[in-house]
Length: 116
Image 1 (spheres, rainbow, N blue to C red):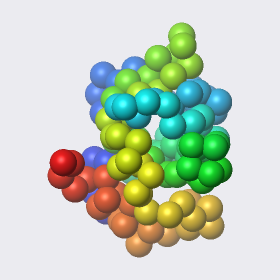
Image 2: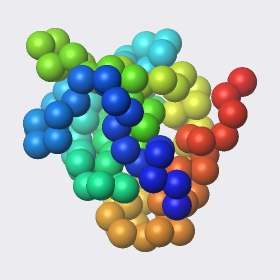
Image 3: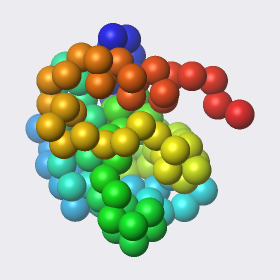
Image 4: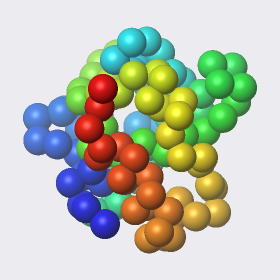
């Protein structure tokens, strides 16, 4: 598993320990939902985003490496992916996202591949 995608990049404005639950999440082309859960675990940092009605209540797992900016004042997280890329991401699995290395490898590979 490549830790790069599972860690916040320098300069995005996130400090470990700050609760991101409830923050709005903005893709590069619009709003996708709110943070339901998040983790700052080293090598496995991520956001679980509740997309609400946008994609029919689906939850998505976004590795911390997709975060481009955290605005704590506006309680908004910007990610460097389009809504379509996020919509087409691997299915969120609430039972596997916390420790299944194959699942993390699959999600990480999806977000590391070159974007169009």
